[in-house]
Image (tube, rainbow, N blue to C red):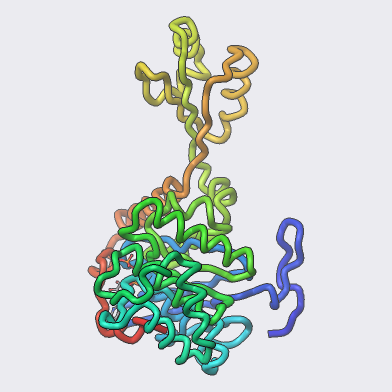
Length: 350
Ligand SMILES: Nc1ncnc2c1ncn2[C@@H]1O[C@H](COP(=O)(O)OP(=O)(O)OP(=O)(O)O)[C@@H](O)[C@H]1O
């Protein structure tokens, strides 16, 4: 790929050299079943991307295609400008991967495991010690891995994934089963890697966690790209309502809200704690004006649509298309969680 400008974002010209991963019209079929259909997107260097979709939407398939573990049926994927299928071992070191089910050699210690992978990747063994300290595993470094908790395994998995200083990091469900502190630790590491220019793609169902970390979300449904963009652009595209919570209302204020047509039409729930209003984007300015200027209220909070709300919107849209269709368009497997033992064996540690 040459380095001509490919697009203009709001304040920056984006060139090919800014692109870490590029997918062009990617299709992946398993016999007659299309796990991915016509998927195209770019991921820029230093961006965190949330890859979200229902069970069986094609997220893990997409990660395996980017890693080159499986080949597309048609279409192309470029990593750092290289066609994935033609990348050599050295170029592949630019990719780091934390699989959904990290499987280790359980009789090894943490230190032995990282040193083993360091050797495979041609990295100085001393890096293993540095990473174990960085990931809070120093004290457990001589412990066998069959004694590691889920959180310790995930930390070690991430340490393994970044051993070769990858420019692109692919994380498949990195926070499943982790306690809030362990999840926060993982996202703290992700933020550090992003600050160093690493592009990070996180496949996850934990939308509340990823929402504040991501630049963009890619939303997959039934193998298709349903939407892609920042949370702000997805909010604008979906025109979902916001919620306003009115706290500590006096009896007189509550009465005023309920008798004012602009406000009363928006009341969603009423409880002793206050009132919850649900407001379409077109009503937001008028409602806020009324609350602030006319009622002089300050004790309220505004909650814009979350990534979860956006996700629900797109999932409902595909369910509607299923209901409207004259014949079933869903593969029986499309909404199933799957176990792909053979693939996982291959991808257990790349
Ligand atoms: N090797 C395979 N052979 C046949 N079908 C497959 C294979 N791998 C994946 N699939 C199918 O492709 C679809 C997408 O699977 P994939 O694992 O990518 O979904 P996912 O979005 O990661 O799901 P989950 O959220 O449950 O992990 C599913 O319907 C799955 O059954």
